[in-house]
Image 1: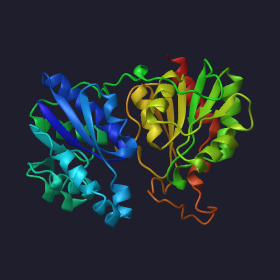
Image 2: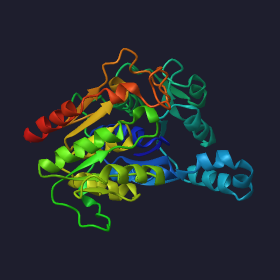
Image 3: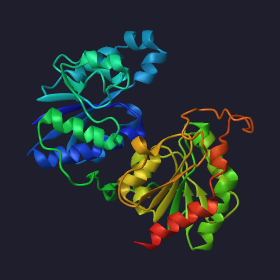
Length: 345
């Protein structure tokens, strides 16, 4: 059986789909998946052994330069790739307007959520087969339920299994030797309201080193690299990682003893890897999109206005939109929470 998944972004959301593929692979013999995905995150689907091919989109670039993309044939090339194979089932696991646009480009019938369950409701027009799922449950469980209904197998009672072995991926060449015992501090995030203060990270670096760990700090762009360097500058056993491929970051995460994370895609990578991790939440809600799985803990702000889902903090005592709720999260509690998971291993 050949199945095409349409799920374009974002990094953490792509990882949320992996357990559903594990379910389907256990329920249906010889099933294989192809996956339509944004080129920025195209490594993620191929972590799962039952995903054989990816079809890459560059929709963010297309949106910025639609005329150039049309003239250069990028639209037509993508259209041909999308329709080059015959699939038994094609399913949109993202169910928003971006993914629905891709669904409309496919010549065959598409499975997706019904009107009441789509986050962006007009998306349901793209689907011939529409399903209802419990949207109050975690995103991983929603996707597991949707795929089970579309492929007509019983949803298993077992816990979500990402089905991924990150040990296959090679470590990158770095300017320093990778320490034997290290923690990953995922300090970066796309929203300012998800960021914990640099001073808080620096105090945790010292605590980690006192306990015999080195600390690695990843980044996704130049600004985040400078932030990582600033955090690492206080201790010789802390290292700012350069921008790396997702496969290289996955290999490093697999080797880490544990992680402390902002609410960002690499926090979900820690969950995929199954390493002990504490993820810090203020503006966002853990119930539907929190890190999920073995050894995962959440440190959640107790501010009355959290979660607010705002990208700039609106409180009067906020400086430059920085989150007051995140600054209020106790550093010792975060460290003690991670220590408890590490000691339980």
